[in-house]
Structures are given as C-alpha cells and as structure tokens.
Image (tube, rainbow, N blue to C red):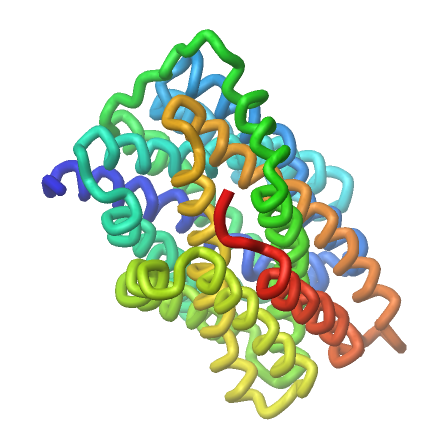
Length: 396
C-alpha cells in the first residue's frame, strides 16, 4: 500500500473514532452526576446514536452506492455534527439535550458505515488484500479512542473541568471540524450507479439462514455493550476510582484493542475463521461482566477493560469484515450500512433502553446495586456464546 493512501485512510479512521471516543465513555457520568438524570433518562440520551444508526446508515449507504461521492457525505455530516455538539455542551435539561444529541447522532451515524466502505473500496481498487491491510487501518480507531481518553484526563487534571463534564462534548465538536476539513484530502470514491436499489439487495441476504443468525446474535451482543457504556464510568467511581482517572482507566480497552488489531486480527481470522473468532470476541465480554459481578478488587476492574478492547476487535470488527467479504462489490456500502443499522442501531437502541430500566430497578436509596445489574448482561452474553458455537456456521 502506498504511504499516501495509507496516511489518508488512517487519518480518516483516527478522527472518526476520536470523535466518538471523546464523549461516549464519560458522558454518562455527567448525566448521572452533575445533571442528576435518572438511569432511564441517561439511557434515552445514549439511545440517540442507536436511533440514528437505524435510519441514517441505510440512507447514506444508498446515496454513496448510487448518487453521491462518499467523501462529500462524510464532510457535510461531520460539519453539521460539530455545530450541534457545541450547542449540546451547554445544555443541562433532559429534553433539550436529547433533541440535540438525536440530531447530532443522525449526522454521525451516517458516517460510520461510509468510513468502512470507503476504506474497503480503496483497498480493493488498489488490488490489496482487504482483510490483511484493513487491520493496519482499523488499528487507528482504538488508538484514537485511547489517546482522546488520556487527553481528556490530562485536560481535567490541568483545568479542573471533570466536575461538570461538558468538556467531552467540546472536544468531540473540535475533532468533528478537523474531520470535515480532512475529508477534502480523501481519495474520490464515486458511486457505483447500478440500476438496482443497493439497500434492498443487501436486505435480501437476510434470507440466508446463517447470515440471519449472525445478524441476530450481533444485535443482541451489541445491545449488551450498552451496560458497559452506561454503567462503567459511574461503576468505577462508586468502587472508589477518582472521576478524573476514569477516562484513562477506560482507555485501557482501546490500548488493548489497538494491539489486538495489529497483532491478532489477521492471525486469528486466518487460524480460526470468522465463526470461532466471533466466539472469542463474545467470550471476552462474558468474562468482563463476570469481573463486574464480583465488584472488586479495583485493580481487576481496571484491568478487565482490556477484555472490552479484545471483544470489540474479535466481534465487532470481524463482523464488519465478514459482512464485507460476503457482499457483492456493488452493494458493499449498503452492506456496511445494514450491519451498522442492525448492531449500532437496533441492537444498541434496545440495549440502551433495557440497560436503563435494569439500572433504575436495581437502585436503592439513591445508589446503584451493581452486582445484580451486571448479572443480566453476563447471562445474556453466555447465551450468545453458546448460540455462536452451536448454531452459527460461519459462512453465508
């Protein structure tokens, strides 16, 4: 791969996930803490991105496959998203924040599958092994998430902004502006302009039993990830970890994710195939929730963040690669849109609502009872692992 193409695609991947990583791990602490929102309200705020992912990816995938250059869609969506984030940072009521985060999520959700489809397309156009070379680009996603977490921790140490927590939205907005500008340097990715409707052709693949099973398990597993995003920051603080250290502690997941992407992704796929690599990924989430159920010691809770990083690589990223490999070339943008709509969309939305309700039901005297809360995703992830082992075939 030429260094110019590698640099452009890597910068795109870095900024895309730095934006998400700036607010997603720690915004819940602002909502549950200074803004005094309930678990259900926090769940609805976090549900805005899944809601956006149910709608926007399919529209964006259709546009990119049929009518508009992918890089242009990315630039416009991130620029509008930046403005919405700046406004959201200064809102403190549930209703106003929900509306702004929903509008923002509609913009950001459109970009998630397009980043992948642009990368896969450019690698294929250069006659490169997509599975092998995409790992060298995917690695910048966890690096970005980790670095922005450490940056935010350093910022809070220096400027004492951790108490209010709005700084995470401001950082995300600034990064969105940078991303919008950088899209002008991305290689042109023209639409295929086929006579078919790409989204409908992608959905036809749900008629394959094995692919349908893969989608269903992916939705459920992705939904359980919301217990991690909604609960971990507050869980850590309740276990005695200082709020200013939470972003760095959670960023361990992304540091491990980067190492696993670079050293383990291609090797594991080659040796185990997609089915058993997905089993490994789901099992890592199961182990993490087992640690959470134990609730102590603190050092084990911090170290268990690495299991989330491993799970993301070997389940989420491998799932995206698997979907790309089984899709016809002319609908790969829509196929990425479908997998994002199913997992980050439907899966995370239902998971967010479910996690919020479970958290509220397990709250006594103003405090969350974390052991019964985390026993729920623990049991469901066990079922997902068993389903992958005994039902999913690993092909479509």
